[in-house]
Image (cartoon, rainbow, N blue to C red; front, top):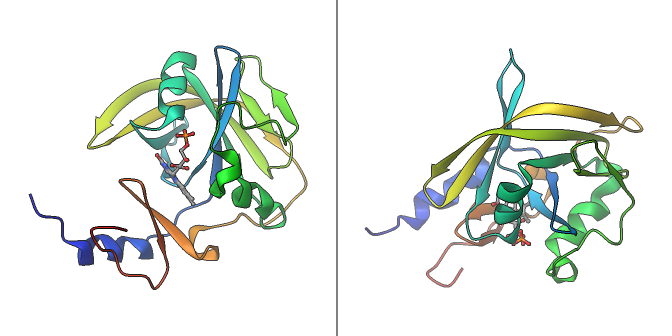
Length: 174
Ligand SMILES: Cc1cc2nc3c(=O)[nH]c(=O)nc-3n(C[C@H](O)[C@H](O)[C@H](O)COP(=O)(O)O)c2cc1C
């Protein structure tokens, strides 16, 4: 099947929040940038996060059965800068940040403007990602701030390992 790069590029106009997805399993605490996240039910309140099956975090979420969604505030953009950078590309990459561990063993970043403990209810394979649907556990809030959103960044996550710089065209090598 041929990929229509023009169509994929248009997906950059969708608006998403910017989160750090955190998870702990087997003595490792790990985090990744995450933007394909949304609330999917009101009663009960359920949140879904889509995670590439090839990501290290994916297996950790399956093992832990829980993960954290940390809402990145504009004044804490350094969180996104770190998880975008090569500095975070190793196991146990939460060391630079102070975490609060929840009752279910989920690390929540104290620097985030809000943190949601997400307890996985179901997992659905959707193409090359898994949609983890989770109920809310603990909720942590810090100082009021405005959440960072996808259009505040000069790049956008488009899946298949692609981070597109805005204005850049997708090619076979992107
Ligand atoms: C702004 C931004 C948003 C991202 N959103 C997602 C996402 O929603 N789902 C996903 O699977 N990867 C997403 N990624 C890619 C992962 O954060 C990235 O591939 C990370 O290195 C995976 O880490 P891991 O393999 O250590 O788990 C995003 C990356 C960026 C920069």
